[in-house]
Image 1 (cartoon, rainbow, N blue to C red):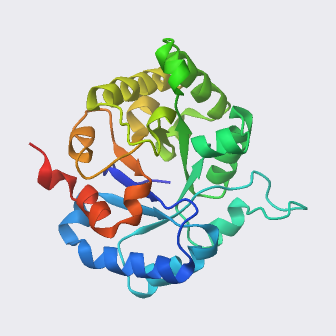
Image 2: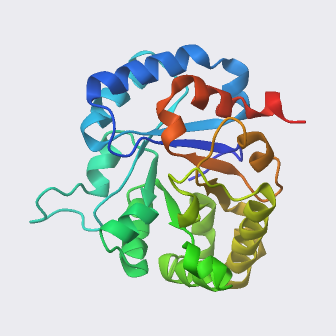
Length: 261
């Protein structure tokens, strides 16, 4: 699968918005963005499962240049897994990007690197693109173990992938201490870890894979810090949580290039 190298701005709505509210957000966002925005940036929206079909319908019927994403997936193709959603089901809804291994799922649902690895492979096998989340917590960061933790997560989550598959993988670096806390890694922090992630992928998969993979930063991304974060050479996009539910804020993040120094 081929895709351009535009920055990827992803809105993770988490457990917010029923399908009526989701439709309103998409319509208002479409009005707030213009052709220049879509030529410069790729925008993916990740509503809850119950809103995927509604958002898909709005995007397709109004021919909106927005990309549909999901927040999670089950690694098996089908079976007795009550309440779960398979990659094949998502693909049938024209989902393009699937978040796997978000820190909230690692923390609250006990997902392991092995679980994330299986989900990553399932997403790729279904012809979609995984957004693989990695990141350290405050204790790991303060004790100097941030890089070793991220390296461990990368190794486990991407284990067994072929080097050419990395062109279809997005890695989202989301420091746990900066999610929903109002704390944000500085642009320099984000750049250092994004460069570390790229170097790790280069060691494991080769230089071409390191150049091809896109790396997002996630963690209290706001209109005010997005321009500086996205100015970093190894930051290829942002994974936006709370601010993606505020249309004006999210539109300003998408238009970040207008606010760069």
